[in-house]
Length: 447
Image 1 (cartoon, rainbow, N blue to C red):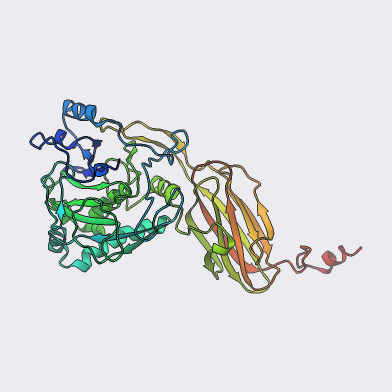
Image 2: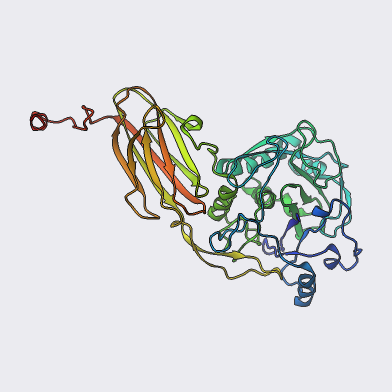
């Protein structure tokens, strides 16, 4: 069952407490009927503002059931970030998508007048998002650029490619699914939800990425820091649209915490780790030398927020050198120890348990010859959480494309890492590994 998520704020803080409950238990004046639409989209997630009476929350949580269904992506003994599900089909990719697969998502903004149902107990009504944002930004190009920045950042950090779909047929915003040239996989609309500084927006889990923004909320009038309030709201809500649930406790270190914050900009370490587990890193799918991610020609380069997303993932990178070159390659695990846990069924946050994302997989690095298979050098000397280093590896087959290959171990959990490489003239002048130097070095090698 797919459920929507919402964000709330207060006038003093950007705060949200999320709970899955039937719509009738949020606003007593609403009907007890669930919103119309396909059954899998009829149970939204609701937010309670700080100060909501405990008995109201208790009554709602009693009827809510489980907070969300954990999928096979989230064995609780290993994965501390909170994944509910991921996209299994899109308009571009078709079906069959699963854990670690790179994914293409289209996104569109619905025309004003598009019908939006009662997602979180608010009255159903037509979308007026375009007019609302035009009133703040002056023209469509300006606010579309804000949304594009959000999707560009998620793309930089994950194996997701986003494509803006300028067409949207205005069909009811109810999880119809994307159709190329007709509507996006992710459809964004807005109407009045509850006025200023209450519910900011809500979103549905895959394979429904629809987002509804509160267009009666003056919260969005603040466009300071490059519209950080709007960007972090959209980035958080789209996190749910990628299949992420809320992550606790409240420490203002994770985008997907139930309380929105503007102390940072966009996805943080835990959010990146979770989405890399689901979709791989930005270079996916580069599991073989034939599909190697091209790094091109460089003197030195560093690529961060890469990942081995499971126990079968292999990452291969191609790089181009002139004759007589050598390469240094260092792979460094990325991570930290932090508290992580799920949101409770009553909307409060669990205290979480310590999770050390640095010591997940024991990673190995290899340099491959131009044929993409011959191993020129390999390093797997250090333990989990420690860097592996290859220094001055002669690329003796001449000018062309060589490869760096990275693998993990049998641990079925995502490990973030950083890859640093330097290409320079080789110090090795013979294929047997002798380095340049004085005649003493050469003569000592003669029998």
